[in-house]
Image 1 (cartoon, one colour):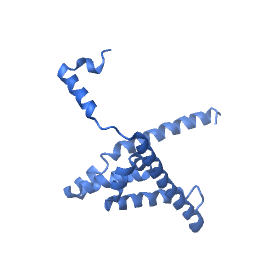
Image 2: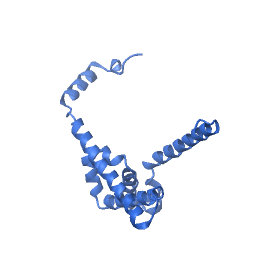
Image 3: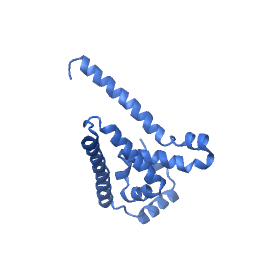
Image 4: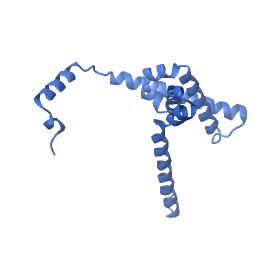
Length: 158
C-alpha cells in the first residue's frame, strides 16, 4: 500500500518539510502534568461533595453519586456561563475534558454560542451537536456492556 506522502507533488513535500521545521514543539510532559493535577482536583472536589452528602444528608455512598454529579454539572455550567471554565480548560486541556464537568461545559458552551438564534432552534437545536455523539456512544456502550454482563451471568461466569 503506498504511503500518504507518495501522492504528494515535490512542492507539497517541500512545503510539509518547511512547515514541520517551523512547527512549535508542544510541551507534552508539562501538558500531561497540568491535565493530571487539574483533573485530579476536579475529582477530589467531587469526592468532597460526595462525602458532604453522606455526612450531612445521610445519603449512602451508593446514593450520593447522583447528587454529586448534579452539583459538579451545575458548577461547570455556572463557570462556563461566567467564562471561567474556558480559561481553566485552556490551562489544563484534557484534565477538564474527561470528568463530567467537561461534558457539561460542552453542552453549555454550545447553548450559549447559539442563544442569538433563539431558544428552540438556536439553543435547543445546537446544544447537543457536539455532545450528542458522546451521549449516543455512551448509551450504545452501556447497552453492549449490559448485554455482555447478562450473558456472563446467565452462563454462571459472574
